[in-house]
Image 1 (spheres, helix red, strand yellow):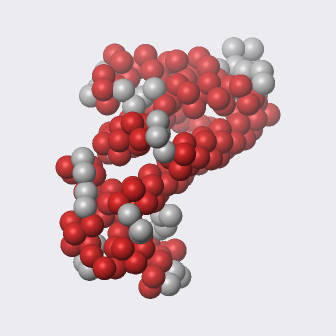
Image 2 (cartoon, one colour):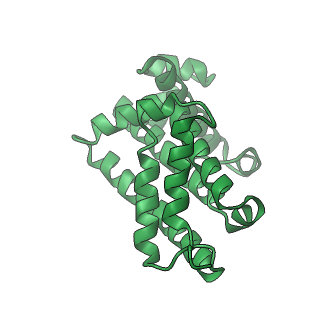
Length: 204
């Protein structure tokens, strides 16, 4: 579970402590690729006993960190795919900004994504979180596509399929070559162009 600072003010002390622990797990993983209860507790300004009050094992703590990451990813999709923003900047700029935003997100969480992909082979919990998060992201993207089609900004077609294609393309940005690209370089322009061409209504 993740939350904004405003939301955290309404949470119980127990929930706030859990959030700090989950955030600490994520920071430890991104910093070193591993974590243990002692390091996480220290970073979260809690005790090791508190860690085990919230998580029966390090595997459970990892799963909680992954769930928080995927909640953040869905929030990224929800915040980023807004027709109002598209209307403000135009399709080409919007597509370039979408690509850049996805790359920043994947870059800042690259270690946890890599570890979770490896763990998915043996963890039903990781696979379940991924499937649920993917569905939520595609649901929002489908809504975005339908709104764009209604405004004649996007091409005709099955909105669900277009949304799935856009999400699959976006997942591909978690690629070493893409993560190393500079904003505005040739690769960035090409990737933005792919998204623009996927959505563009050439009949408008």
